[in-house]
Structures are given as C-alpha cells and as structure tokens.
Image 1 (tube, rainbow, N blue to C red):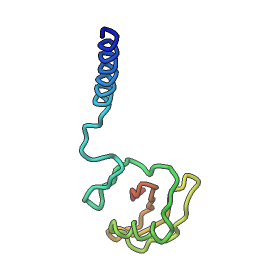
Image 2 (spheres, rainbow, N blue to C red; image 1 turned 30 degrees about the vertical axis):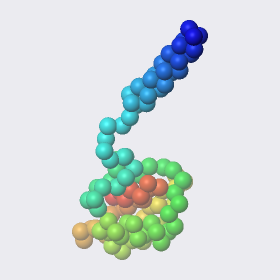
Image 3 (spheres, rainbow, N blue to C red; image 1 turned 120 degrees about the vertical axis):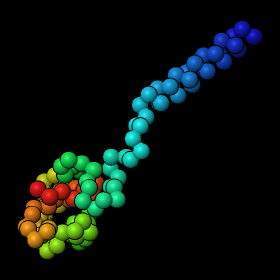
Image 4 (cartoon, rainbow, N blue to C red; image 1 turned 180 degrees about the vertical axis):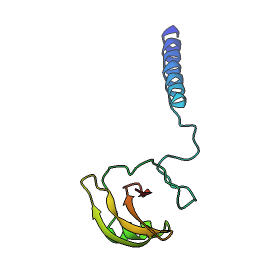
Length: 107
C-alpha cells in the first residue's frame, strides 16, 4: 500500500510540474505575432522576415495591392525569399517587400 501511495504521489508531482511549467511559458498576448491585424497598413514585424516564402508572384502582387499600393512592378524574390519591388503609395514611388508571413513593408 505504501508503495502504491508513493507511486501515486510521484505521478501527481510530475503532472503538476509539467502543468506549471507550461503555464509559465504561455504568451499572455491575445494576438499571435504572425497574425495580421485589421488595419491594412499595420504589419506584425519591424522588417520583412526571411523564411521559406510560398507566395507566387501574382499572390505577392495581390497582397501588396490589398494594402493600398498601386502600380506594383519589378517583383523578384531575393536570396532570403522576400518578394521585393516598387509601387506607388499616396502618389509617391516606394520600395516594397513581402515576407513569408504576409507582412507588407515599405522601405
């Protein structure tokens, strides 16, 4: 009986420890960093994030245009898999970039 009790206490301790460790690392933010917000000009990263980009050129162009840019030209994927090109915004030419997370960044 004593051995069964010791095993039960040990299992309970391991389970409780794992649960507490999990809660200690939980992100308290309600918005995950990779999720775009409702404001079309808001991005979730300070700079385009390098990573395996699965956007096609047409998808990249549409995503950039959906953020209010027009006349998107010269789109090319760079060595970090970031789509880069030029566009017009508020009557001015700007360099734009689209990362694998879908962030559109004017540079």
